[in-house]
Length: 191
Image 1 (cartoon, helix red, strand yellow):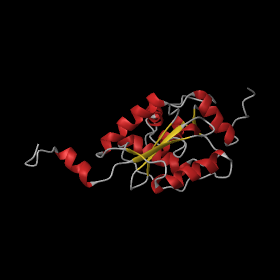
Image 2 (tube, rainbow, N blue to C red):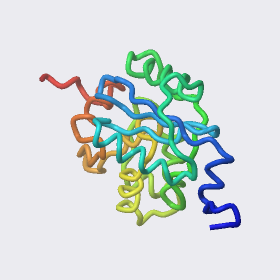
Image 3 (cartoon, helix red, strand yellow):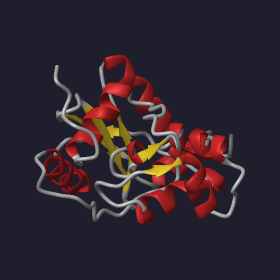
Image 4 (cartoon, rainbow, N blue to C red):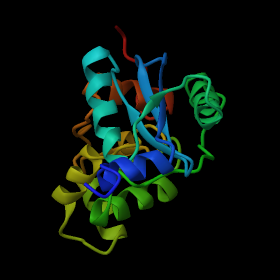
């Protein structure tokens, strides 16, 4: 506490607006989108009440209280671009991204993924490790994919096993299959 009776974190919160967030419908279920003044900071799959509450709590660590604001200008463009992506009218996202929820090797891998693996293409975990100069780090790449705070926009669904297996996915394998089918990598599921 300082002389005014506030903690340093409370003072930081008072001077800087927190992230804004909203839950939006998508072809793969409800997504929580969150943005800061820097850019899109989080995309969360299956945003049921429990998942939403945990995601908002995680956003709290950005230093200011998250605010639900579906009509925020900070969310308008991410919502528009994601809607176009799911409708098959957009292949690339042109959004400012806020990387504050990820750092180090994981951030390096995700940045390479975001810029180096285009729509409709896939890459192996080991291949991605080699691209960032860590050829023995395929498992660490898997960890980076699992910690991706910006799935879909930073396309971790495009990372697959070298033997042709689909690999894991934080949003569930059915979600990964749907995203890869949308991009023409896999056939549409029969049921």
